[in-house]
Image 1 (cartoon, one colour):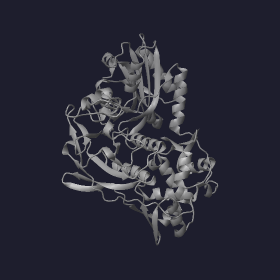
Image 2 (cartoon, one colour):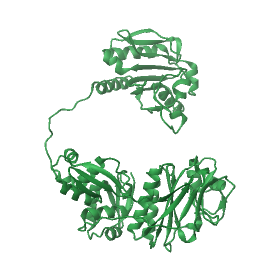
Image 3 (tube, helix red, strand yellow):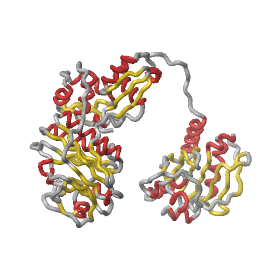
Image 4 (tube, rainbow, N blue to C red):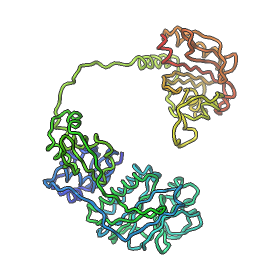
Amino acid sequence: MPVIDIQYDELKQLSGLEKDKEWFIERIPMTGASFEGIEGKALRFEFFPNRPDHYSVEGIARTMKSLYSESTALPEYGASPGQYALSVDETTKDIRPVIVGAVIKNLEFSQGMLKSLIDLQEKLHLTIGRKRRKVAIGIHDMSAITFPLKYASYAGAAYSFSPLGFDREMTLSQIIAEHDKGQEYGWIVGGGPYPLITDAAGRVLSMPPIINGNMTQLTDRTRDVFIDVTGTSEEACSGVLNIISTALADRGGSICDVTIESGGRKRKTPDLNRRAVDVSLRSMNEMLGVSIDGNLAIRLLRRMGHFCELKGEKIEVRVQPFRMDIMHPVDIIEDAAISYGYDNFGVSPPASQTVGGLTRMTSASELVSEIMIGYGYSQVITFMISGTHSEFDRMLRPESESVGILNPVLEESNILRLSLLPGMLLLLEANKHNELPQRIFEIGDVHRPVRTRYFAAVSIHPKATFAEIKSLADAIGRDLKLGLKMGESRDARFIEGRQMSISRDGEAVGIFGELHPEVITNFNLYNPIVALEMDLDKALRLR
């Protein structure tokens, strides 16, 4: 969660609350934050990720003012018509299709305000922006820009400009290769073409999501700014633009709209209309465990900055444009709880007295852990996410039904594991520089495709044999009183004739034996390996 440094003097000025530091330290956490300490005149808070509008002093001051000031007036935001246009070329459609923008005028930048704005930009990049992949923000000094603007994509050598931090012009390919931001974020746009925002004179404002140009760098002399937000999600980009625009409006800026022309369609951004969410008064009382009337509910919600009106048993709420977190009536009810005050709900004894205890599976897992540690094995925990290559190809198994992962980051992270053994062998592969023998075990969930609890043990050393792993299987069955039976098995992962199945009441629950040499070499290992794997959940049910 992001940690925000809030300058105490600015917090007092923007909120209009003449309170001491201790007062703010006590009350800000009630809005969804934890106090992290004081550095100079800055109060440090770690804010919950559901309130990105709190990632700056402007946002938290706005909330404090609504909650605790005597004024009942709510902030209202709107965009004045502006003669500013931005055209979107279809070359960006498959690369970074979404762009929105705003112009904020009549600002007076101080060093504190400039730092707050840059901090807000970076916190939004990190959280909502998913490190600029989903959303990237550019903020530009308007004095250097000639409208209309154009958003289009170009080959690596098609354009040159001077990026922030460099005093010379560079091609787009050079920026990706040499600039620190290009090296950090170039993967988002791949090998090109690269998106650019240019003005009417053909000068480059920005190369989103990589870097802005030197031409539009902000200074303490900046008075008007142009904000661009690009990305892959219309909702996320618009929400981020609203957060920054309203924060600057709270600093005295005037918001002007920008006309976005794309695919023959025109629209104006930012959209600062308040969204409608209806809340049942009965549901609010049931969820909060209180009995408040409609008038009190209205007062509570207005203290959280909401425009609202009581219509019988229903509250019609109009949500402020910077509240990206409001997605459901329950979010409005949470705001009512914050306004009511968590310390005002009182205490009550539990409705029923119960005694906690371990589940059967947890007790069995702990017992297996104690047994295996006693046998000289070390417990490991490997990743639940696996890949088809490790699960099937390297293990010599035919592909079977599995739980896939949509849009996996890596090819080797595209399914949930069906077995514990591939992850354990990957662990041995990473530790092959350590001395032998290495004996490890794991108890964890697999998805086949239904989730179930498995137990596995692996031993690697030059003298590992079938007898070693069979004695372990016998001991486990004896110590857990499972009544296991051993029988013939044919599993490609193990050497034929040096493997056995484990069953209970005629149903297979596991297998053990010497791993096939090809499996061993597939994981870049070169010593004999014996392994045991058991469906612990099934074995216990049968018992």
